[in-house]
Length: 168
Ligand SMILES: [Zn+2]
Image (cartoon, rainbow, N blue to C red; front, side):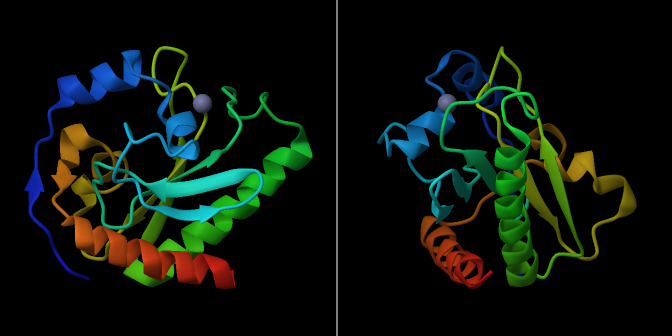
């Protein structure tokens, strides 16, 4: 796996956007130019998957319903939920195989105070990360920092993952 420099992003700006900015998933679905650089890797009738703009790991992808929903389970009928999980599975497998992850973390965060539109984080853990730097430490910007992946590399990786999701 290629390695990239890490940097500490401006967390105040990040949280400010999350808390007061437009709801970013709806913005990405609408291709709002205010949300650049997310690189959509899957889009179907009900779900969309795109890169985290501040990835702590190479291949860090988010999966979300295209409609605005806020409860991770209660916002969905069970069949809708399972349909979304089918997309989570396909995206996670595509990411895992593409980047050679040792493990893939899948989690849903957010709250009504920030990033309210429900989404699942699909976070590939590369091999060889020390134990203390795994799990949530590997997911969070505060502990892992952001990977400085050049834009053309992000686009190329997105194209490869898109190809794998399409075959899934
Ligand atoms: Zn939304």
